Amino acid sequence: MSIRSFKHRGLLELWKDNDQSEISAKDADKIRRILSVLNSARFKKEMDYPGSGFHPIEPKEGHYFAMKVDKRFRITFRWDEKEGHAREVNFENYH
Image (cartoon, rainbow, N blue to C red; front, side, top):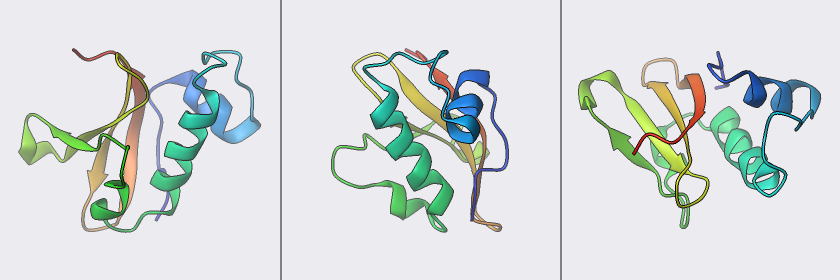
């Protein structure tokens, strides 16, 4: 029931120290909300709220998902079903 690891240093700094120097200022609040949901969720269905853009990324067997930040960028992560936590949380343009 928490975020276990980050791939993107800017997300880690935003989450741990509220340092948004590596993140676009216009996206910082939305990213904080997404990280808060990831940190508190125990089941992946909790991340599928209206406007989240929550969806699986191939390969599906890898439990890899994304949530929309804006038109181009996503927060991507692996979800551990058994333990109920996110890991390898990243900020990327994967299209």
